[in-house]
Amino acid sequence: MDNVGILVLAEHKNGSIHKISYELLGKAKELANELNEPISCLMVGPAGIDLKELNQRGAETVYYIKSDVFSNPEEYLYKKNIVDFINEHKPKIVLVGATNFGRSLAPRIAAALKTGLTADCTDLKIDEDGNLIQIRPAFSDNILAHIKTVTYPQIATIRYKEFTEAERDVDAKINIVEMKPYMDSYPQSEVLRIFSDEKDDITEAQIVVAAGRAIRKKEDLKMIQDLADTLGGVMGASRALVDAGMVSSAFQVGYSGNRVKPKVYIACGISGAPQHLAGMKESGTIIAINSDPSAPIFSIADYGYVGDIYEIVPQLIRDLSQEEPWN
Image (cartoon, rainbow, N blue to C red; front, side, top):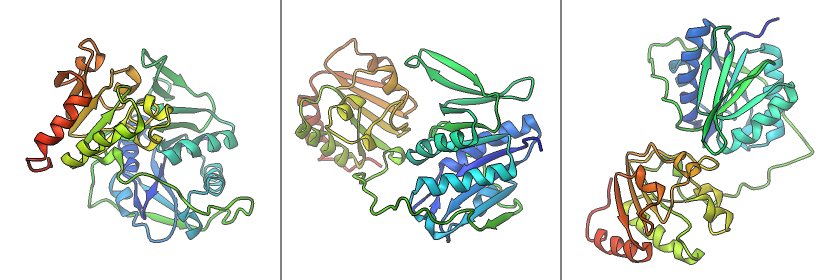
């Protein structure tokens, strides 16, 4: 049997569909129009997830491997069920969200299927022969690599907020096929507890105040957090602070961290390396504070202030605390 169709691996979060699933469906619809092939969606998750919107966003068939064993992110169980499903249904293309879980899961799926995987794609196209061309930045964002996988299925992970969500058609036919798990236990491992220091999801924040190398010690991050709190936003950080152990990767903005598109992004002491810009350059309004007037961050900033963040940030907090928080 030849591989046919596009399969979107939907993801759930706190009992609901993760929004990256709708972005994947948006791109899948573009590809399907060129290939003239169907779009299906696979959700592996616990009972109680309302999947109708996946049909309304473009999936002709939604498969639901449903069991409460999928309440926890046990990667082997997810991988085994997804691999068995793909072997049975044989899609041509598989799209996966490059979330923390997706990034861990996709390589396991590709290895089990003995096929290729292109990670963190920024675009996908179909060539004249009907093959998927996977496009991603390479060499520190200096070039865009065009990659064609010669084995099937062709698997790609897509970063969150890279594509526009598929439009919703409330009149779409609802076609959800519930399935029993191919495997529902894996005694070699068990999820005992999930740790997270995220108070807020930085990828959903409308205001992000991010700190860079100008921060001298971990305790100084309090002023960045205070500014974020004053504005009703979320604190972010560059990779340098994550590598220094000052903050966890949950707060990292950049190509190897989180992609954000807030209404307002305030870069405090961030020089503007290409890897960081890749994660925030599409923010609505960018405000840069840096002591170096030649810092690359100023080239994309809507507003810039040359000065010491240790003087400017506390003054901003004092001034803004007299005003209503931004919404």
